[in-house]
Amino acid sequence: MESNNWNVSPKDAIGIQKKLQNEVVIAPLGKEPKTIAGADVSLNMFEKDIYAGIIVLSYPELVPIESSVIKSRTDFPYIPGLLSFREIPALLECFEQLKTKPDLIMVDGQGIAHPRRLGIASHFGVLIDTPTIGVAKSRLYGQFDIPELPGAAEAITDPKTGEKLGYALKSKARSNPLIISPGHRVSVEEALLIARTGLRGYRIPEPTRLAHGLVNAFRKGEDLSGFGKGSV
Image 1 (cartoon, rainbow, N blue to C red):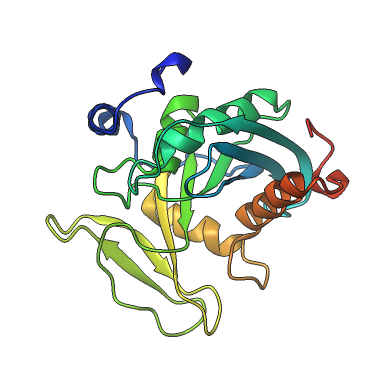
Image 2: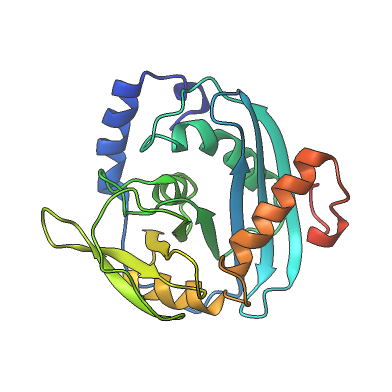
């Protein structure tokens, strides 16, 4: 997608999603990643200012290597299911700034657990041709049983076709499950395994947890030196 094509109507955005969903590849990685990134965006629901950040970590140690942040503007309205059209342009700028291109990116949002199989993780992964995993805090699409014990996971399936879209992962006691789904060029089972590997005692896996901290620190004008030595 060309950068000047982001200013589209919601109807056209749905059409773009339906077209791009055919480019999503759900398949095993093929090799163990050596680096993993977390990507997150911070903005108020009805405001145009947008703060985006990507942090690259070693894998599986999860030690920060580099980070990139961007403040941008968006004109696309807040519409559930179409949030990638608000958030991806800024994430693309962050990705371009990175000197260390990660082997895999964990995105705060949906992968294929989306009514058109193109949540922000899938959309972003297709555009940059990089494996991605969606880690969302709430369900957008799909059905599942609620996992009861910390560490437990239940399959998320399409209510129409029965296709497995990901897993609901109870990452911590007394917390709602996370929605883990592959975005692009990773399998459903690998997405769950890598999400579990990223847990460090918090509800959110470390890559997206650190990305969230990076973006909020940037938004508040705080020191970013603890988030890697990259383009901050």
